[in-house]
Amino acid sequence: MSSASAATRWWENYLVRYFLPSVAGMLIIRWLDLNAKETISNYVPIFLLKEWKDFGTAHLIIWLLFGSLYCYIASYPILVFHATRVLDFKDRNGTLSGIWVSPYLHAVLFALVAFSAAWFDLLWLTFFGVLFFAGVQLVRLYKVYARRELFGFNQGYEASIAYAYLNKLSKRRGVVEEKSTWEDDEGNTAERTDSRLVDLAESYKHLREHGNTAFIFLLELALCPVFFVALKHQSGLVDFAYASILVLIWIVPSSLVHLLGQHLERRYSLFNH
Image (cartoon, rainbow, N blue to C red; front, side, top):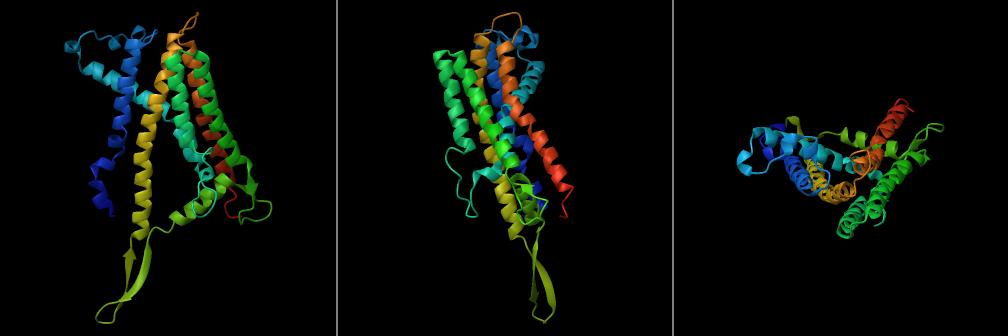
């Protein structure tokens, strides 16, 4: 697929792809504002809207901004799963490592626990679900960093499976186009470009990105009852204490992706070895 034709595929634009999760986040924030004990309207007065006839541009902008913020926070675990995706398959054939390793299974289980906690009004179950989900991500980060082998590198320059995978992938992606020699009717030799590899790479990237949108939507829905229970049980001197602690636990694994990036950069400095 040429870059010119890609430019006309407006539905593949990032803004379009993430418009759905942002709108969903906006609606979830609005629902929480109307139903939770501690509401955002107490701190952002513009959220106060008793009648739709008073709805204006300012409301829409503020709600979309908060919806986008909610969308981004909800998507943090996907960053961890993407950075540790080498764990999801165990051989060249792409055989799944195991159902219990699957990030999708853990996301669904987390959603079930979150909604169960809201249904039975159990704050401890809410904390358990977030802690377990964060723990799964931390284990994955440790595994891609801790397991080190030669992977074809020189002795003394072992690499983690995270680096070995990205190193191999970057070399594969370096083959942007494959050229073959052919002769025309007059016997002249020429080269033609085979764009099959480019099409294949674009296909799996688009599949992953569109799936990413659905994955974010799933996590947005799962995170909604977490905030609901936390705000419902809110008490004490500090507003949003439970919600703040849960958000802190939620973002810790994704913040450590920065450390993984530092590790990859450090190992990359020995690229020629």
